Image 1 (spheres, rainbow, N blue to C red):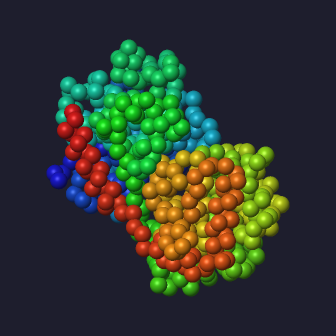
Image 2 (tube, one colour):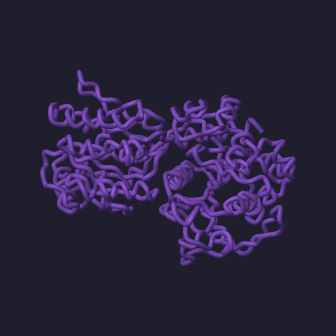
Image 3 (tube, rainbow, N blue to C red):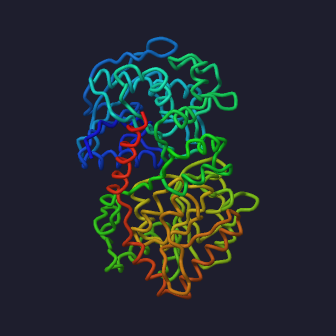
Length: 490
């Protein structure tokens, strides 16, 4: 394949800023594309959590918005262990504050329409500044949704005449919906925006702008690409996605096997282990039980959860105040839980109450890399009862560490976890379909009973799980195919 110029337009990427899997995907995919010989670059805001130390100042950039000229500084750095440039747009009024999308994960900044309209418009101006016009503008989620619309309605007869766009949906539940009067931020008339399908149900919809105008629409797993064409998972945009069905593709995310490798993981040292040497996994479990204040007992199955504590992840059915089943699971079954994460206040409060009342449940309302790696490495099972899961990464980490996923059959979870077969012991995890409190209770009971009654099956599944690979190399090759198809559709 030929060498393409690819501009990733994103609100976050590791290690600079992260709120979820989007940041992991952008960084890992960009590095892999560069290793495959592509000229890939990233543009994103410089939030004030990103230090200026070590950044190169490229100078000032003029960005002609619909409400007048805005100016910002452009700083440059590179992704670790690569030569992938990251261009950081520095505007104190827009990004000089704590938080990416809001002051806390459950709240949004009131000026997000302006903040990310600026990112979209500035992406074109940055290319002009660099005197580098990409073949593909790869847009990630609603924050860069205006880019394909701007490309089609404004920039198509400029230097960008041969530039295509691809819109990747990481989570259709977040769409960038704003009042119509905020269309003034974009350098286009509302009539033009509406004509190019940027209005939905009487509001601006940044994600719809991308879906309707990009040459290619992708999402992060094949199953999710099918699910979002229906009303249940379509979040009101299923009609647009069915209309774009011929241009809609699902590409499963890969994972970073250099960071998530139980044989070399420094965060679980000295108890590193492999598929042929699992003894240290038990030692790691003992250490985590001790540090968390759980009973130190190698025979009790340990279930880990590392997640955003929000309803989308199934926490309403798991620990909701009126019908959640977590208390019953911990009370009825010989099992232990460790839960790590932050999220919606109601969920944090419910989990704190359960932690206080149950000796076999420990909750850490925080996030740390060390704890995440410890939980993935030490646990016997990993629970992900998601309402929907576009791709998911933790089930991939769990597979690599021999920690059998317990997941709902949705999105990327369905694409990456093979259900346990009781007759043969085949499989890599435990799947269930109905998202109800009772279904969660039953599938956890199924996994726990298998742990006690058929330990040879658990051992077989664990070894098979650790051998599975979801490579960014394969995913990047698939995206390169999509880039070629996007070019053909201009």
